[in-house]
Image (cartoon, rainbow, N blue to C red; front, side, top):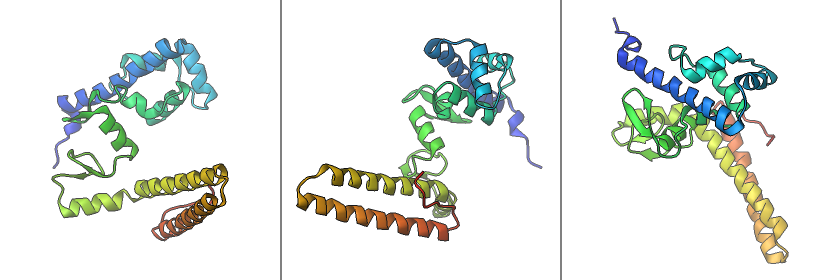
Length: 212
């Protein structure tokens, strides 16, 4: 029978630090950046369709809910405060230290890129999907397969950005030689995007032809 480590003092302290960090950043953004009351912030959350009461906001800011932190609250408060949700989780960006998992301390930027899926390449720490220095071949394979949706999305965004860049170059060039070159690049990148979308569909991912 496995022991329940979530109830350990160490685990509770880590969870409490996470909630306290979020609460402190909510308070800072509300009072120092937006300079609004908790009532006004509550009104903003109501306008977003998920009301968070003034009392709840006060408890979040003071971390008086026994480390309770809802994903829904995190998302709505971030939107109401005009920041990405990840900034509430890791407010000491870029290089402030943060305990991203119990007993795993990294720079805030490393925590951010792990959480958002941006950091998918080699790293010397053990966070998530990265190919860590001490990974076995089996672990690397598992990470590669499990992270397909995030990697696929990054590839799509990269291809789309390439198309946008080529379109801008076509529009900005006046001489025929350079226009022809960038038209060819645009056609090539568009074809690559179509092929990538089809491959991802074959891999079982939902991929739209729309860029909207």
